[in-house]
Length: 242
Image (cartoon, rainbow, N blue to C red):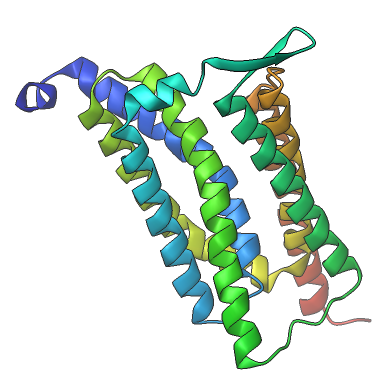
């Protein structure tokens, strides 16, 4: 452990893996922000904290069973000469869940579904949000940790990178969630991102890899366009009509 502190290779691996974990966490932050936007404060903050804590626990726990995780990439059955591993099955299931969830939320936004409800309904909503966070955290955690195993050899480096990335996600998830609540049009954009991410997960499950750079570029470009739209709306509101 002490020799890792003085190893340039260990620090390079830590920085690289942390950056990768943060990038992979973008999907999780988007999903988390959309989910908690339907819960009033302070329940939203509590749900976000619980969700990220569970994500951290999942990822560290999965790191402790490296042999089992590596086994997830081994084929378990073949269909039409296409082999599928447990990782593929989890990615396909998680991707379909994201697509279904995002589509359901988009339908709710288009139909202007009512957000109100009793205290019991709020409690059920909170519980259901946590359940969904757990499901998606599991999908993202497995993909993220398998990536970490392929990039680093030391368990200490992997755990440090995961903890740092989760800390960054915790700090950024609050502002992102508040921004989604304050600007309703961004929620529709975030839901569209989730559909895109779900399609990418399903494609990965069928061993058709879509380079994540394309997806993240599309997300950044769309966010930039929406940012300028928000500025334009704000300026029109401030400028008195002639």
